[in-house]
Image 1 (tube, rainbow, N blue to C red):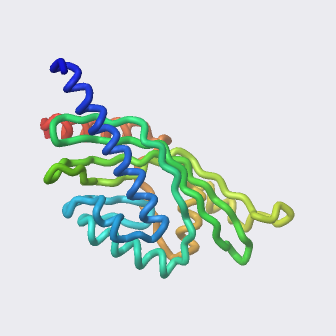
Image 2: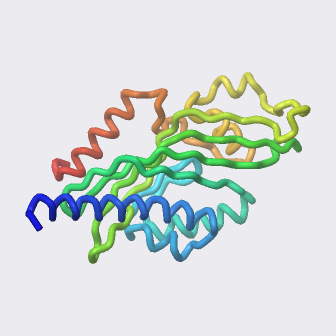
Length: 208
């Protein structure tokens, strides 16, 4: 096989392994396969979501286990890995995603969907790719009542004070007693996203 073909084949294998990794991690989380979820993360992984901000793969998995029990969350994730960049044993992966959640708000059953992208650093460790970070880049979200005849039980005055890229998510989390960071990454703040991506590029190429 020609050297260029070898290189292309290895790049394809790495990309598919990375795409499988990010799909497997969210699937394991949703199905409460915490052993599988834990195996996806590097020990020093950094994770930031609407309810968690911390370092340590095992710490995040255990926090997720507790969160899913205490909050009674039924959220599920669809993940569509789309863009991977690989430099040696480092990689970044960005994936369009949707988060689905059915919950009760002021006694009314509601569905809310979050449109976002998941972004991760990954490193190759002992021949296997592991997630070194997990960030959510928020796009927009929607909420509706399960019973269309019911009125959506939200305080619209409060809602207008929340970030447009994740306002319904933040509102729901507040109802659960969780204060959501108002400075998470989102498409409504493109300059912040540009700075984030520049930092990830510097990490990937070893410039940082």
